[in-house]
Amino acid sequence: AQTVTQSQPEMSVQEAETVTLSCTYDTSENNYYLFWYKQPPSRQMILVIRQEAYKQQNATENRFSVNFQKAAKSFSLKISDSQLGDTAMYFCAFMNRDRDDKIIFGKGTRLHILP
Amino acid sequence: NAGVTQTPKFQVLKTGQSMTLQCAQDMNHNSMYWYRQDPGMGLRLIYYSASEGTTDKGEVPNGYNVSRLNKREFSLRLESAAPSQTSVYFCASSEAGWAERETQYFGPGTRLLVL
Picture 1 (cartoon, each protein chain N blue to C red):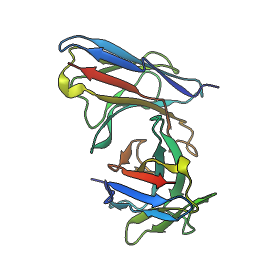
Picture 2: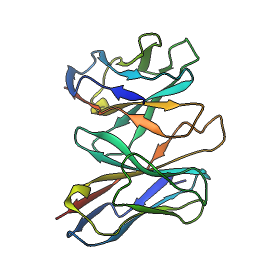
Picture 3: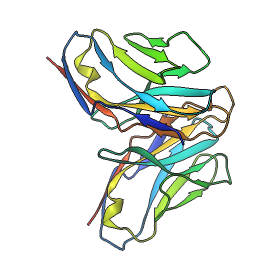
């Protein structure tokens, strides 16, 4: 069975700093997607970034980028020039591409951006 | 374009009462999902519907029933609420077209308190 592990329950960084959130996963599959979702205090779940396992190039979305290490089954999220609005829970998630649509989520990392 | 909407936003129930959480999406998505979010547990899938007319159990289906009323609507019913069902419930949807099926869009959530 697939599992997703986020080892950092909570983190705090100063505004404008760069922060990296860790995520590891376990799977025997070869074809899958990985995601980072952001959940601000409003509780809405927002897709931040998506990575396709067959792509070696790391996905980027403006200030957000990932470090995808397929062999190590690691998928970390880097937030550059952090902003107060980045304060949120961040969930790493995995989905098998070949079977069904179910997503497996990690337990989340609570990120505080300090002024 | 409202995306995914959920009602109610907040509900208090007494043990043994029943209620239905409503979810609707206007993105013409085929797949819809119900998750619950508990502290330290991440998001867990309750039920999902891959297409209109079909429903399947997720990770934690006990105590819940679902109805895929039509393509737009997917409701979650608690027949006899228990304190263990106190949680935040999220509905999500995704496009069944193969290229987009893996991205899920979430509603704003329903906070349920069972006394």
